[in-house]
Image (cartoon, rainbow over all chains, first blue to last red; front, side, top):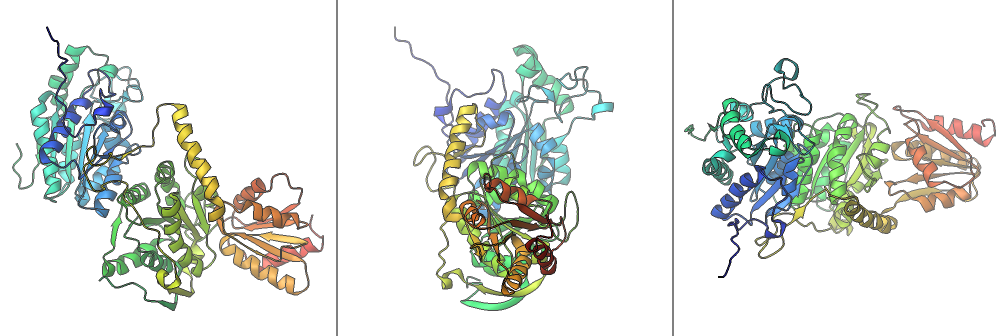
Amino acid sequence: METKEILPKMPKSWNPASKPHKFCPGCGHGLVLKALGQVIDELNIQDRVVFGCDIGCSLLSWDFFNVDTVQTHHGRTTPVMVGIKRANPDLITIAYMGDGGGYAIGSQHLVNAANRNDIITAILVNNTVYAMTGGQMAPTTMPGQKTETTPYGRDIKEAGYPMLGPEMVAAIAHEGAYVARGSIAKFRQLKTFIKKAIENQMAGRGFSFIEALSTCPTNWRTNAEKTWDFVENIMPKYFPIGEYKVPGGKEE
Amino acid sequence: MGSKPIEGERKVFMTGNEAVAWAALAAGADIMYGYPITPQNEIMQYWTRLGPKYDKKFLQTEDELSAGFTTIGGVLTGKRAFTATAGPGNVLMQEPMSMAEAMRIPTVVVIQQRGGPSTGTVIYSQQEVTLTCFGGNGEGLRVVYSTSSHQDLFDYTIKAFNTAWKYRFPTFVLSDGYQAKMRESVVIYDPEARGIQMVPTEPYVGKAGTPGKDRPAAHLRNTYNIEEELLEVLSKDIEEYERVAPEIIEYDAYNTENTDLLVIAHGVVFRSAAMAVKELASQGNKIGYFRPITLRPFPKEQLRQATQQAKQLLVVESAYGQLLKIVKDNLYGLNIPIKTLLRPGVGITPEEIAEKAKALLAGKEA
């Protein structure tokens, strides 16, 4: 009997030469980038996208796609993408970052790009930890959550509260902006959000921002079951999923 | 719209900041990104007044980190993009310029030095030499032109775009608050009318065709997994930098044969030095000067030759030994006394230099 190797279907815009990808087993980046890859394919924009990736685990996507890609510095992907878009508005710029890059070291760039209503799309992956550096507390670490720098759990009196990114961006963003929080646990919805965000940029309406709830079993030190439970059930209690700002005001 | 900002050439009386804005226009710069800091503000202010008439763009960013990184973004699309900063802004600018250095991105940055450290003064200094030449967590693979007049500011701002795009090293025009704010005569011109061809630009991202199908995707990075991988890239860049350095190096020298005293100065201080030296030379003293115009790469061989014919050196600068450090490094092994006139953060007059030089020539100062 002939055996055939069954390979998962890869988005056309992925770079097959860099697969299998470099993320840890169980990491959520692959799913976010799968959703993005499918969206790039469906919108047929592979020749117009410039993908920018930050420092942290997101940098591992520097050769993930067969689209023009720039790996930048920690927190600085947003301004690089803003600079590209301002100089060549025909390009579709996607800034891809983690929660540390977007909400801590690069928060001024996120806030100001949102307020200027820059016509770019930012996708921020929230896994509640600084993963590349070994699991320290992130801006999104949940109250009580143990990390390498909150070994007794995040004490909100000492370490402050987790950052609610889409809520903040939606509060300061202007008409034409699109803001949503999705989750890798709800893949089809996440993909819809990403697609709407990029379509919003293509229509020239305004800033678009997606936070994707994601997993980090390596630093969470969780097995498959607990990992999935954390992203599917625990994280959304603090980080509610849904659309926060939609042009015309029809949030789902 | 569409017509040239400057037809032929014309003599004008303007501030250095205004001259920079005109030079960037004349050079065909497409977009400026910037954040306010004294004494460079008027570069943005003139650019935003002149720019829209010629379809030029501007973005005022949230800080100098963003100004530098958006400039990188602009350059990546194949546009002549630039920014300008000073002092603490120059400190922040080192992060994006480190990336430009690592990825050979031809950014152009105009620095109008102010007093430091920290907030210092908004007025003047030559204290950003080390930062501009060697800032960032790298090896200083950049080009730094030190201007001493408004004509220099105009000429070297145009040249900076060509140097950056020809050699693909981040290029700086290093000036100061005096040059930024004072008015003087300058001839502004259309580069073409002077036979200066602008080096063509090229996009790094967004080229024609579908990546992976019609052409390889641009995968631009500045991070490496292993030591040897980084060393391979860096060795190539260093080798190239050293190979092209002789083409880039510029300097000015006067009366360097068999001098009793060779005065070394750069930037606006060079003007004081030149006045003092020429005055003393006209009185029969064996005195000359050497002015490095490029501080990176440095005119090492030329300075060594001039030094070998001198009895002693006098380094003059509005800093506590930043040019001095570079000079000593480049003269290593030569046995020559080096005297100094170091005035961090304050201007230096021709009279002060002449007084010091006279004392040294008379052997009154050790």
